[in-house]
Length: 449
Image (tube, rainbow, N blue to C red):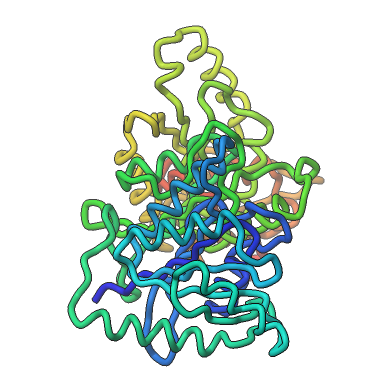
C-alpha cells in the first residue's frame, strides 16, 4: 500500500525544516537562521503510533517575487501542495500574520486538500495568548507548537495520523513518474554528484518527467540532498540529487558547509556515483576533486559529460575536451564516460543501464583458482624486479571481499613491492576480469610458504 504524503509549507524562516527534523527524529534537512535555506522538496518516510506516512519539507513560499530561485521554489511549493494528501501550513508566532502568510492561506483555501494550521515558536503557555490572531487566516483552529523545543509535537502528530486514517481506506495511486520502493527489494543507491550547475537536477527531472527538483541557471540551487525512488526496466533505483561539491576553501557559509557535508554522507551510502561535469566548461580541478572523493570512498563511478547538445557539433571543442580529459584522467582510466543532454533527454536512460552494469561489477567475485591462474601468467610475462639485491615474488592471492572488491596477495617481501608493480597488477586484473567503474584495493602480506 502506498503511504500518504504530508507536506510542510509556509513562508521562509518559520521553522519548517526544524519541524521536519523533529518529526523524523534526525537532522535530515539543513537548518540555519537564514531565509531560503531549503530549496528542493525533500521527503522521508516516518511513522507515529504505528502509522506510516511520507513527510516532505519544502522551500519558503514567496509569491510575486522577481528572484529566479525564489520563483522556482514557490512553483515547487504549489506542486507539492497539489501532490499532497495533507498539508501542514506553518506560521510564526513571533512575527504574527504577514502578507506572505495571507497568500499561502489563499492558495490552500482554493484547493480541496486537507490542511492543518500550525503556529510555531510558541515556547510557553504565556505565548499561547498570541495564537488566536491566526484565526484571521481562515484556515481553521491554529495548533501551537515549538519545533525547536518539541512542545506539543506529539499532539500534532496524533492529529495528522487521525486525519490520514479517516481519509484512506483503499490503496492510493503512485506519485507520477515514481514508484515507492519496498524495503525488501534490491535497490541500487545512486548518487548524482558534481560541481554546482552541471545539470544534476535537470537529469532527475527528465527521467521523472516532472519538475520535482528546482532547476535554474544559477549555481547552487540544490542545497539539501533529495532522494527519489524510480523503477526502470525492472531495476529499482534510489536516486539522490546532491548539492554541488566545492573545494573546502570556496565554501563561504554554514549552509554551503552543511550541504557539502551532506553530500559526503550521500557518497558514503551510495553504491554508484554518477559524476556530472559541464561539457562546455570541460574537466576542471573541482571535477577531479569530486572524482577523488568518490574513488577514495571505493564507490562505483561513472563520469557523465552533460550539456552535450552545446558541444557535439563543435569539432575544436570536442578535440580539446578529449585531449584534456585523456591527460587529466590517466590515473582513472577504468572510469567509463557517457555523454548526455539532460535538457533534451539524450541518453538519459542509457545512463541508468550503464549504472546497473557498474553496480553488478561492484558485487563481482573472482575465484581463487582463476586469480592464481592469472597470477601465474602475469609472473611469467613480467616478474617483479629485484629490490636491494632481493628477489621479490608474488606467490599467490585471493579476493577477500566484494562491495567494494579487495584483493590480498602474498609475497616473500611484501614491504618491497613497488607502486609501479601494483599499478601493473591492477591494470591486468581489470584487463582480465573487468571491474569497469570500480575502484578496488590491493593488499600485500607476508607469505607462509
